[in-house]
Image (cartoon, rainbow, N blue to C red; front, top):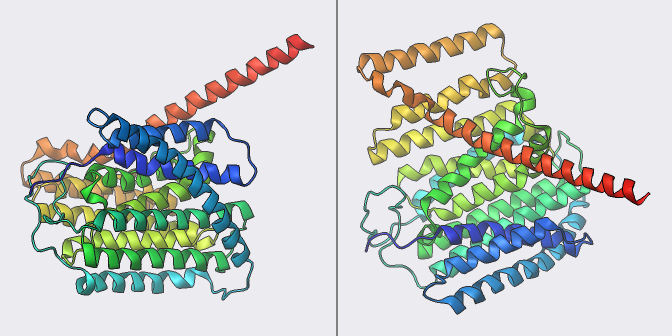
Length: 428
């Protein structure tokens, strides 16, 4: 069996319909429905309809779209009860150790959990025939389990909504940033631990994750977007280029990233986690370890450890070993590109949030440039030297699109305000 037919429309439905459920949660808690609910619900319904192959099955596609819209509203109603429970449970006293003191033990537990995958993870009887085409995922069972699709998708959605509910409850409680862990942090940690255990069990018995239904590009794009949005999120501290704050994203984009990055980052890590099976091959270990650390980070909301620049930078840099290990395993020849390209982002942007001295930054930058030039020079591969700019161009390119969207929304808002002002003036 070759790669099963995956569906970007289904990936869109898996994004927009949960978002619609969160908008419905606001409505259930007394807010008036707005344009956001309409747009996201429509996008989710359309994606669900397209995923059902409307040309071959028009009525099934229509039913899928309507069911997705109704399901989002129903989930919003359930989420209201869940969020109320989380809010009440968070008011109970709980152990309050310093969150910083838990980072190293949490990393050790995550490493042990990765090691556990060698024991409980399993390989299928045989894999699909891998085509080698870009976007085709190779870790798919040739013989799917009858319950795989239902277990994988229900487990993913349960995990996703549960952690989103914790983030929602924390934001609406307006919790202060403290050194100590709060009751809500323990709840969020338990939610992610439960999600990990659930996926381990699901993968052990049915193997396949979401990869059977949605393309690999959607999983890669979700985690890559974390790095791209982080550029805006960290810009007040790092700047965008070499620590300079002369060029910064619009304030609207920075505020958006601060308010919604928790939802976006937890969606990216949860979706990517459930996309892959828990396969015992060493290739998966670095990616799994990185994802588990991101789960720890999402549980540390409203603690000072959550914003510790050394901790957050370590999470960003964990992309590098996984990218290199993956390229070496696939023998794609892109190991050097990923190494120097990701390190270029460290030199251009990431290291400038560590309060390093100017001398230290110049030393790191000169060491990087010398190493890159030596590597390509010794191999006489000067034509590949521009490859080190691939990831910076991609990340800043996506950031540029976000900047344009924020400026467009600013122009629309200002036009609306001007129209209302003129209307009020004419009425008076």
